[in-house]
Length: 257
Image 1 (cartoon, one colour):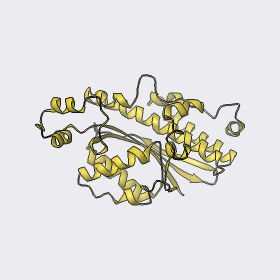
Image 2: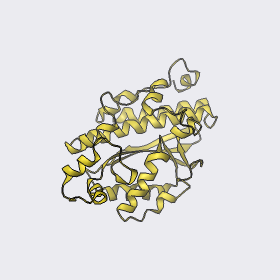
Image 3: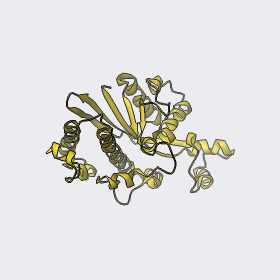
Image 4: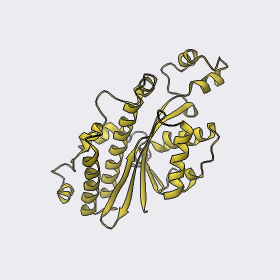
């Protein structure tokens, strides 16, 4: 496994598709929004607003962070977002890591590629849609042993592990409102924090199961914080992650110091 891609989607209702489903005027967004209301849309009706991704490369000493970003529909079309992400998967053939990716992000990607009439073979570069495959690690599923009662939210788990968690006052329920009011960059920033939290949970999981030694875990954490430290001045939403290591009482954390 040379690369890992940790990813997360932020979505909004596809009001035009909602209108088609319900046989109403496709130009009347207000009517479509009334139909949606406060309901959680069926997965094909989730238009992708942002795809956040962190790419890390394996080394003899752990994982090295190579890139972190969250391109969004304020910059390019939904089709371009999906195509670019799929092309990157085709190029790298990485392990995919997510939190609730098998239940939401991956099927949404597949549905929306079809809605946009895309050829996206990169989504099948490895067995990403096989729930029990190591090609795609859904931490929400894996850590709960694939049971409903064992699941928890990413923000809860991150904070339990001593990680920053989600930014205060922001959650997925506000994404549509933020996009509608021109605050798409804030959505992208929020998406990046989810990706970083997911990556750090995955590193802790890899340490726990013996896939990383304590030294490799510490160096992987150091690579992430060094990557963020260089960029946090221009990306203040990442500041809570700058220079943060495993909690000091954890023996593994001392390796990074």
